[in-house]
Image (cartoon, rainbow, N blue to C red; front, side):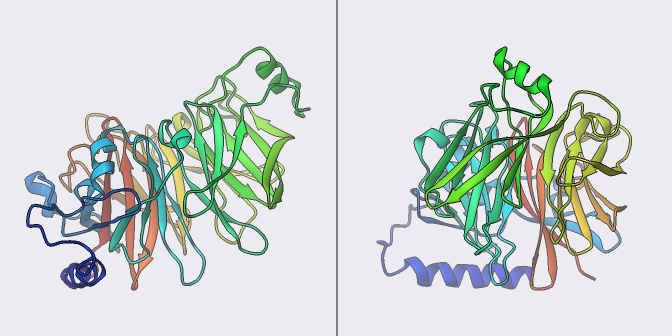
Amino acid sequence: MRDGLWRSLSFTLCMMIGGSLPAHAHHSPGHSAPGAEAQVPAASKPLDAAAAGISGQGKMRFRVLATSEQLPEEARKVVVGAHGGFGIDRRAGKGDVYFSLSGAGIIRISDDLKTIRLLDTPESMKKVNLHNTTLWYTPDETPYLVFPANDAGKVFTTTLDGKLVNTLNAPTGNEGFAVPEVGDYFRGGGNFAPTDVEELDGLYYVTTGYSNLDYVLTARILATSPFDAIWNDLTWGGKGNEHGQFQTGHGITVPPGTKRLDIADRPNSRVERFTRYGQYLSTVKLPAGSLPCDVSYLDQYAVVAALDGPDTSKGAPVYVLENDRLISTIMPKEDLGLRNFKHNHNAVLKKVGGKYYIIVQAWDPGDFAILEQVVQ
């Protein structure tokens, strides 16, 4: 299937662009202006000898399908600074994947993984770091993207074509938060560094793991036309090691079909689960010493990108869980030759044609890769 995927891609792209662009032999694959589609040929970035290898165990073993070499040119120039995450359109018949790179803007990967498109992005968003991406839907299934800008202290909401519809600024402390400590913190000039956002039942849930606060904040979505959001009183968390507290509440996820919030508590090597009201439910423990950044669910599986693993002399792992049980550990750096993958910052699980794929992003240095399930 893998070779057929790329042959089909080459034909599709030739049909799409052959009649509208002059034929110049010096045009390189993947060169694009904002809004143009980049070719996704077979991985061509120089890799270690292990690049042809396979990593993982059992039915969840993976190999490299594509690297940052297949990103649009503007994205390749800045991928070393990657520090964000992915959102997937999970609606039936959809499946596009969205993420952002500071200096390039919002990027869309097609459902079939054959094209990568750089979207026109407002300058206010291109110049800052968008630390993660969430795609959510209104009750009438209107889709929106929401991005937490950890360095700018803002939360941006856009349409799927990148049109900015709302900017939620940092709290002032006068919003009537249910926890007095939170209001005092912002009134005293405490930093607001959002690391992730999820939407559930008309609320944004915002993790603030890069701030001294480390609470989950909420904002109420008031309307979708015109779009607006204001800070809400519901808050919970705080620094600590007890259940319901965080050392770095990094990523937040609503598993499909649930009203549960799963938060990656990075230094505590765990995923903490809560009701939509902030009531603690349970914990999924990960290997001691691992630093989970976020969790992505699909079917009975979950994929967890770790910033570090138990052995910090090696590159960090990507874990695959089945019904909350660890079944596979993928080592992008050692096993797959992805030299920049010392630290994994975000990964999502996607299915195409009966096969699973992991789209993963590294940090410090930043990088990007798509991994393909190896099927016996």
